[in-house]
Length: 265
Image (tube, rainbow, N blue to C red; front, side, top):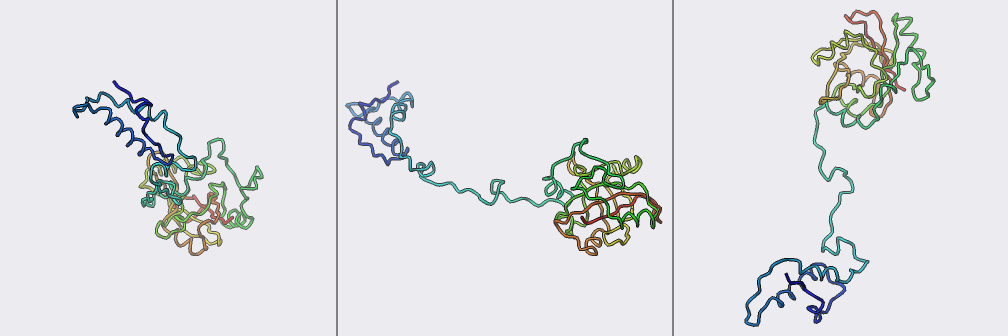
């Protein structure tokens, strides 16, 4: 194996503005001359190792040149998209919670708490149920077992009439103890649902459907559907509103005594 030496480049005049490609062309030119025999035939090339010397001893490129300029081009980078320039594909409405609400931190079992009828920890981030709601639930409706289920931000998908549902992801629930064992087992079948009474922010009562949706294999949400669009319209709910959903029990003309109160915070 023959390597090029500094002697081979004694007649080469190096321009500091050369790019790596220019150096490579010069190496090729000199190497071709060295391979030529006196009779004009070429020697057999055994290895590409003859490039080592030149690149190890080549002068440094001017520091003012950036990497893209040395290579002769500049790469375009997306400044407005953090997913490699690809457009986010549309998703079924059942998966929107994974996209929009998954950004919130998930609560561990230790962090989840049961707030029964009031805020025992006096946590300022979790306001207590307003007195007018308590009075309506306990005195007029004869309710009991008041429990905070979730405090959440209304997302675009929650207020979107096309989606037509309020989602309560399991990862954001304050407690999973608001359902009876029979109710929880029944809702594991996604084809089942429960008709419940809802006390709206306007203090009006309406009937709504409560069920469970499963996303993928590891994520689920409870949802309110069939009547949710009417609740949004009548109470002026919009994206970025903060709401609480409280659970309680009360005798109604429905088969189930499960009820909910929706409160704007």
